[in-house]
Image (cartoon, rainbow, N blue to C red; front, top):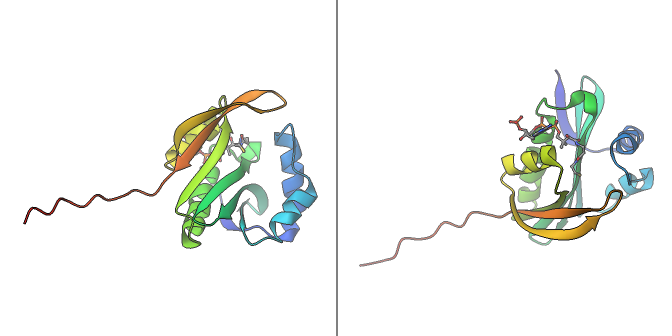
Length: 156
Ligand SMILES: CC(C)(COP(=O)(O)OP(=O)(O)OC[C@H]1O[C@@H](n2cnc3c(N)ncnc32)[C@H](O)[C@@H]1OP(=O)(O)O)[C@@H](O)C(=O)NCCC(=O)NCCS
């Protein structure tokens, strides 16, 4: 499978909006996707597989932290490592832009997404009860924080 990971462009919006409607109960509009391209604190990365838009990941950066707002892969392209590649690319770019720690919310029942995030180093730190609608569900709050190297005590 040919796979290209690249920044989102305006021409991707129709395909992303269609995919969004197929996947989510409260889908983002085309305007929401277009807005991502107008503000430099957003990061939006897409995957092109076999010449088609196969998925995307979106984050918002604020000072030295960032939040992953969305990740999705079209059903026919799932379980081929595309989301993992998207998240890895996003985390590398977020780090390059100074976001040392990243967070996100995810439905408690969304085991594929939780597995994806844990694979990328995110750890569950809390629960936000009733955070989601359609259907109502708790959110897990996950963080990926920079590792702090402790210095050995100086006994000299
Ligand atoms: C979550 C989602 C993006 C994963 O996309 P994907 O391209 O299939 O994921 P990958 O193939 O890159 O898998 C990466 C890891 O995620 C986890 N994972 C993905 N799909 C899984 C599944 N069906 N069951 C369990 N774990 C799964 C695994 O840990 C996997 O690593 P592994 O292959 O080494 O086991 C995709 O299922 C999706 O679009 N879901 C609907 C949208 C959504 O729920 N988004 C998250 C909230 S915004």
